[in-house]
Length: 155
Image (cartoon, rainbow, N blue to C red; front, side, top):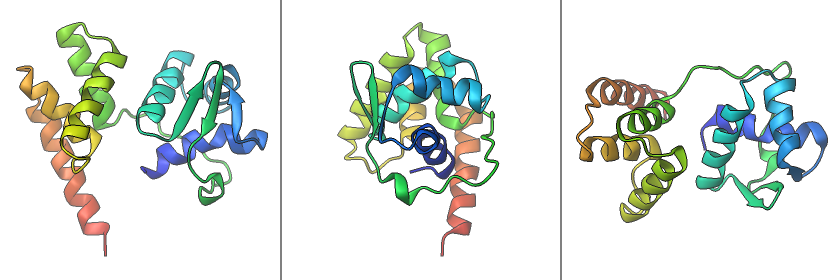
């Protein structure tokens, strides 16, 4: 689980001391309390977190699907507002195809399952875009650099 995303998803639960929250409370916590972005951006994060198995949704309730105690929210945590490869790839597919974000994420999840989860979701989204005839050269180069940087940090 990506560290910042884990912290971001864990923050609303930890602030309220609960494992389950109303979706509106989750959105409020990130959008207004942390000033991370507009509610639509938080909803997109919530959908991605659900697709990645970080949370479960049941009607108007969202529950953490991971050990909240394992995630420490640093004092004064301010999330970055920079869009990652995954978001950029999803946005690129949406802009070129007119598909909804949900449709793109669902396709990416299906593709990742077909690949037996051996490929990270950001790479799967780029693969999907490429299969749709969308030029992803620049994003693929950034993703490759990120992969090399992570490999250098690993023991």
